[in-house]
Length: 375
Ligand code: GLU
Image: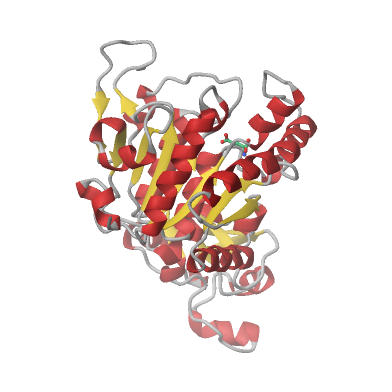
């Protein structure tokens, strides 16, 4: 079987897939058969030449089971203890099922810190690519046992979207317990109508989803939609589908089992994705009304002449926010000068920069190619 025949029409030509699976799929009654099917289907994809990354929840849920807890603990240390106990149980189950197909797997545990630093982001990308080159399926989860609030993703939908952008996936598949998007809650309304394709995730769609609280997992349709919105803006299609009652290969092919979110026409190029969706600004520069207008409306580079104020401690190469006179963040970008240097040259014409700094390394403070304008 070739990779192409495994996908629905719109996804023909897919070479790299990121699949995310939620805790219920992996731990609710009947989970043994679901995990076995998932390992089989991922192995079929892999053997057909498609590169596969699995983002798997379930560490905390498996830890809860081992400790006899029926409700997800609210205190962080207890969640961390559950994750510590559950993560290796989860991997042991995967190891057993993937071994039946001679499929290699590799565990990758992450916190936000690993992605927010550009150096670690690129390093992680190398690791994932190398695992894929070795023919293995990387199995990614949040490193919950060390994650604290400031560095935690909070849910694996966001993590999966980040991984899809990082490996330049051709589709993000989010497996949950419903077949994607419906006009009403399909668990409670019999006449709920399935939506097979969404061309843009707009506010109206976000409002359509009602949240169903779960005792074992976090996230919900709303975080799945946010993840779909993020990757489609980056030019990657997303599928949200039923991995509970259906198998992955059905979700990939059958329109009734999933909703397909089409990529945006104005896609953010891969080199700007880290700036747009991942990196954390180390400071900010405030610009005057004129600079604000040419950046927002014409997508021009930022020059020293338009800068009125600097805040934060940053070095050349760091990411900063660009703020308009009203205090709104209008753009984010990689800056060519340190905070002290920008402070020295703010308001200056390009010709004066050399006098102030002794040399001109760059004419622009932020190059347009290294900047992303936020709508
Ligand atoms: N990382 C969590 C776990 O493995 C799950 C987060 C989520 O369900 O989105 O339990």
